[in-house]
Length: 227
Image (tube, rainbow, N blue to C red):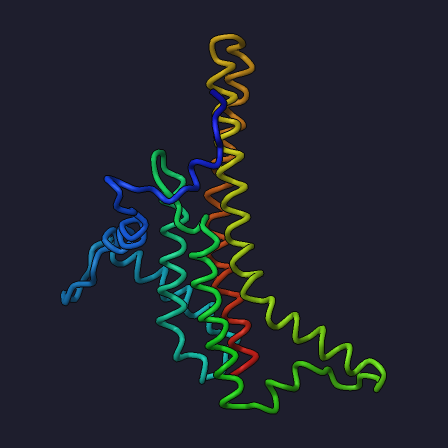
């Protein structure tokens, strides 16, 4: 029977109950909660340092009005980072490989940035649809192109995250299957393939972190245009 490599991306169920909710809530249980003590342990200190540094780096180009999004963007970054990294463990499920989940995150957040721009500075928000100094003949075409590019932003956010994680998981499964098949027949080739698998796993760890950062960074750039 041929293996279906896409079975790993199916939403898991147990006794007919979907486990997507468990996969989404479990990462929050892994983070320690801050204590009222004056001195925290090493894990809490490292967690606070990472969140503070990321928030400062993310909000550096934003205006003061965009600083209200600090908690939301930092929480989204930690959430995506944890889910992506946990999905690399054996016998786990990665919710961010589902396009529906990624679009459910991208569309409301992108729409919120657009609504903020239309409410606070409608002239500047609409001015992005037509660059200054455009020849009169190109005005209708550029307005249509810029409008399409505006509405395609959430799709690009969701598809980018889904495609990168899905491709990485498929490559890992393909090479792991090759190692399993070649091990009894060609041990040397199987060991070399296992080294490639180890390097690819390290690459996927980096991709999981980078894609979470890119998702939040692009949202902050969209917010920067509208505050």
